[in-house]
Length: 365
Ligand SMILES: *Cc1c(COP(=O)(O)O)cnc(C)c1O
Image 1 (cartoon, helix red, strand yellow):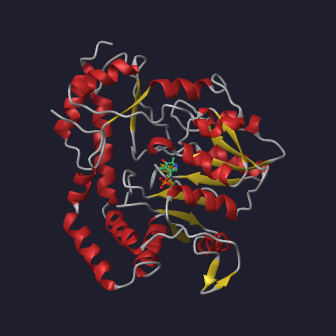
Image 2: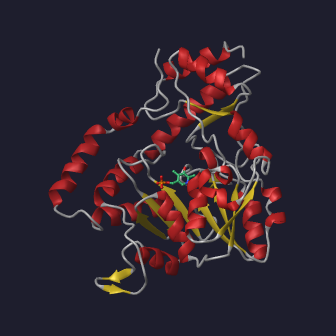
Image 3: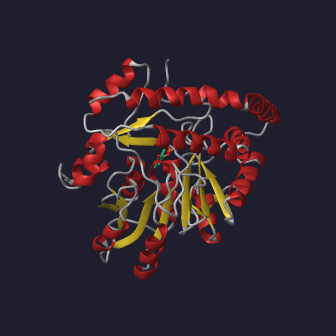
């Protein structure tokens, strides 16, 4: 059997007729930027998350970058991020000329809340939390720390749409929640897209202004803005996926639970879900000491895997100037060297899941 790591076409096929009729409707409408579809999507996404404002933007990275800018993060400010996050989280900090301060992850691959306080200095302005792989972070302690030290709280929810901590959606705990709708994300579109959620009207207006050349009224440019808009086609197609999101979420959870129950091999370390947190299983990440052999073994049986991520952001070439070295964050590096993401995607069949389980259980290292 051939099991791809992901197959976006199958996700598309699930609601093909609806996507195609919406796409045609928008193409024939003659209105392609900042129109009704974006407005409707923003309303539907904020309502579904029980938040007052949503501003659609062009991608997840810019959702993060514009959020930090809107909060006034600037040169020399420190922003706390986890050492094993995807590099986009860190790019948002450095694009604002701020300094990323790294904190090691916990055993759920999210920021270790017990190691944050020791990194807070007089320059710390914000904690930027990534709900990595789809699981909500331990928000209670993070909110406490932000209150205690008067820090902004921004959430990178690119991998965790509608995941919850203590029955509250991610993206709703701090000033701003940032989302990506990149095609492989759980709420993924058919191109680039992103959004921010906030209950703060001033921040919502500021980000809406920043995304459109710094203009809120035509040709009235109050600030030096950008072109970071979500387009009508993406918004319209995302509205359809949003409508079906609960079903898609349920199916991912079903796949993940089948993996968790079925994989039984002492050399394959399974993911944990924290009590109080839920995961939308953006990725199903296991750890294996001999990763290279494990991946080759699975590939020989037709199963493709990926690595998220092989190089921690602080060791990437782009951040050579930060002068970090191998060994600085041992846990992030241990994870970077051992994590393997198994196939999980919309439209994956249970027969495929069972095949992967069966092959993994026969792996002897
Ligand atoms: C995908 C992703 C982003 C960036 O989103 P884009 O839409 O690709 O710009 C940011 N943070 C995390 C954790 C992501 O997975």
